[in-house]
Image (cartoon, rainbow, N blue to C red; front, side):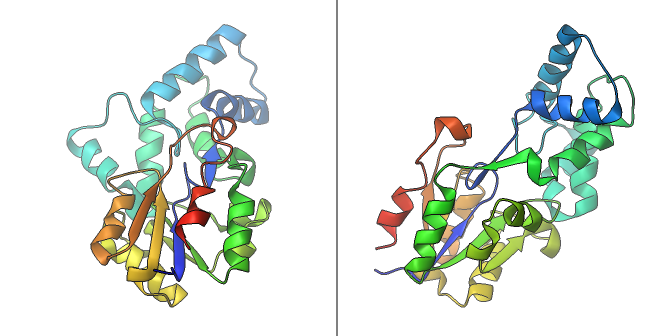
Length: 232
C-alpha cells in the first residue's frame, strides 16, 4: 500500500532535548549565578532524577495523589504543563526560587533542542515524494518556532499539539485531527514515534505505526531513515 502521509512525534523522534546539565548551566549563566562545579553537577543529577526537564528523563519517582493527577494530564494545557514540570523542578533545592520558572522557560527555546542528524534528509525526501507530513505531540507550548529555527518548518503541513486541543496521546482524536488537517486517510498514514503507549494510539484509527529509540542525537544518526523504506 502506498502511503499518503506520515505523522511524527516531536521529542525523542525528530528532536532531542539538550542534556540536563547544559540546561541548568544555561539558566545559571543567564541569571549570573556561579556555582562550584560539584554543586552544579549534583543539582543537574537531582533534576534528572526528578524528571524536571520536559523531553528528558522520566521521573524516578512519579508524582502521586493530586500532583499525580496533574502529571497525568500535563499535556492538556499550557498551564498544566508548566505547573507539572515546575513542581518536579521544585523537588530540587536551587540557589534562587526563580530558577525553576527560568528552567521551564529555557526548555521552550530553539537552542534547547537539536534535530536528529537524519531528520532534515528524511523530511525533505518525503516532500519530494509528495507525501504529506504532520507533527503530533503531547506538549504544553508552541513548538513551531523550534522547527523554524532549525529549518524544518517548511516540510511540515500540519501540527496537532495536545495543549491546543485539550487532548493528549494516545487518544486517537489527536491523530485524527492531524490526518484531517493534512487531508489524508488515516488508513494510508504512518505514525512515527518513540513511545509505544502514546504513539501507538494511532493504530486505533488504522494508521501503521513505526517506533524509534529515544536516544541522544549522537547515538542515533540514522534512526529515521527506515521510514523512507516503509512509505513505498
